[in-house]
Amino acid sequence: MKAVRRLLAMVALAFASAPSMAQFVKGNEAVKVMPDGTKMVETPPLPSATLGAPCSADKPACTASGWRMVETAEGLRECTEIYARQGTCRPSTFGTEKRPRLWVVKTRGQWMQCQLPDIGSKCVSTKALPYSAIQ
Image 1 (tube, helix red, strand yellow):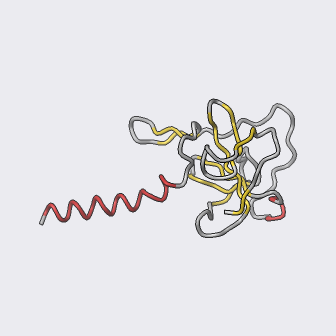
Image 2: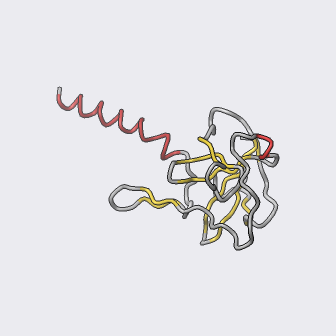
């Protein structure tokens, strides 16, 4: 009986943790799991040039070219910009709503925008025009 309870508890734990682990892009160097199990997340640095006022995530008109999917300390977020400044992100709707998305990842030490949540998809520098896709 104890073995069955233990097995059920392990299955429940696996299901509870699966969505949060499955969403980020495999190979994204910006997300590191530390030896104690905590997750350290790096977001793209702000440019040295002054940026305009942040465009709030509650204004869909700000995202004419699609949402930027950025892994943050709060988890996967939909942002109006790659820098994930305060107020520019909202919880992810990936998997429940289809919309234009770009995936912001760090690979080989460079920040890139990928068409899909896969580093093997079309990825370009954050300084170049990206390839978005409805997902």
